[in-house]
Image (cartoon, rainbow, N blue to C red; front, side, top):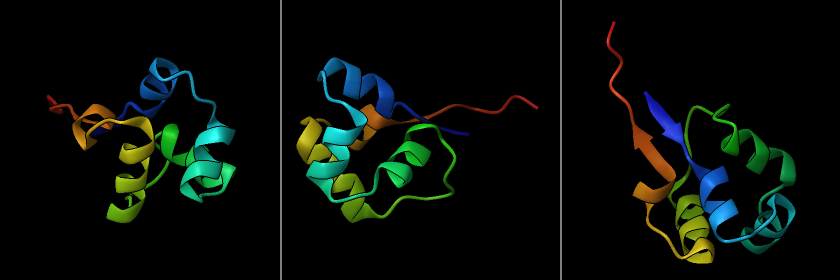
Length: 69
């Protein structure tokens, strides 16, 4: 299971959803869906833009959690 930690990175960088959406050229709605883990995938260019603006790596945003079923 992949967990999206975008909200934590945004809080650490004191950046709002609207500011990040504007800086990466994504709609607020789509960024909100990503932040809340409601998407099935992310384009590498979107991930790269987020990492550039937040000065982080993909591993800071995406986390793998083993499903123990």
